[in-house]
Length: 175
Image (cartoon, rainbow, N blue to C red):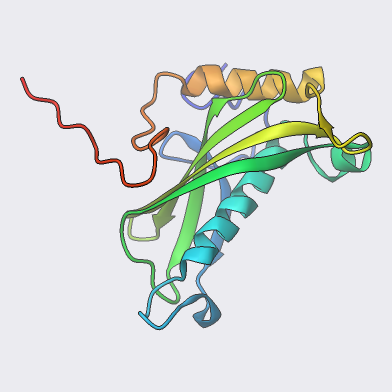
């Protein structure tokens, strides 16, 4: 197993950025900017959603999986805006799997500008759902196995800001 990325069970062409799989890339159109001249907050959630879809595809929770009656539903999202994103900036999203067992998928997306600046993080928590009953249920063994492998591989890597609540300041450590 690739202990840095957890990609051993994923397609060999999977691109990696900062030690995590790339799950989305998008150039910011003018329609995504607001009266302040930067990307509007709604589009951070949108590109985070695309990144979640990208990760789902990497682990086998793809269109065929969904057509078979299983999927993931987002139940919580937390966005941190770290640096401005402007029109025509290209964002690359890498995704760290924080948890991926049974019914749960907890992701930490990092949005990188092409100049290497970390612009935002989008933390997303999802539950696995049976689309017929509309109730949570465990993922299939194949999907869960890939998520668990990635979560284990990513466990030792920091996800600064994950688990914070709105308005919480970073804790400063003193010696």
